[in-house]
Length: 270
Ligand code: DGL
Image 1 (cartoon, protein in one colour):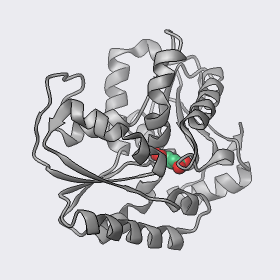
Image 2 (cartoon, rainbow, N blue to C red; image 1 turned 90 degrees about the vertical axis):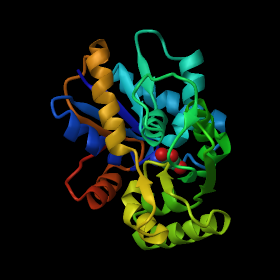
Image 3 (cartoon, rainbow, N blue to C red; image 1 turned 30 degrees about the vertical axis):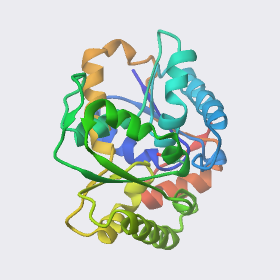
Image 4 (cartoon, rainbow, N blue to C red; image 1 turned 120 degrees about the horizontal axis):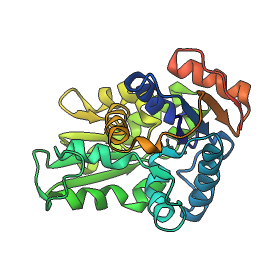
């Protein structure tokens, strides 16, 4: 009864952590495509092909349901995968919608017309590919009106995190927040629209100031998956054990993952 969790690298571990806390009885198989990270500077075709290959690997592990714990893949590939590629007996879900439902105070499946919501000025921090896709604005427009979104492509942050360079990552976060504030001086809310960024959440919050509510995805995605599995238990696959798979060097990736999550994590070659 395993579920697959995919990211281009280490970022999806922030989601995996919340999933294992919320659903301790479910085995999760994690796939980090570290050899090809970062995805955020790749073309949509490239992201589609890499994400499909990783998803197939997770299906082979007995995970009929795969969570793309990667905004870049969710934004650039998921719609095309669902429309053209995923067979009816499998499911691939993204991380965007739970976040937008939280921001717009909606329950799951509430498809009523877009309406006014409390927040009016939202800062979005994401990879260049996610920002270019405008997927966040598209999903938001289905649910809310009158929300001004200013998006900041945060070049370099994923790379610095993958390399384990926290000092560089923090410096880049500060400069991206400053760049955004020049265009939107007083955001009410900030979205960390990349699953790597919760690893730098304190740096974002410090640079934004205490008055800005920072939304990150991990807990929202965990709640949403728990709800989904109650409604669709048939998508719990046949896999029985938790594993961590990587296309990168397992020793190196295990080391970085252990450093970031502050608990021992052992990756195997995918
Ligand atoms: N964690 C991925 C995301 O949520 C990072 C993408 C990348 O590899 O650039 O967008």
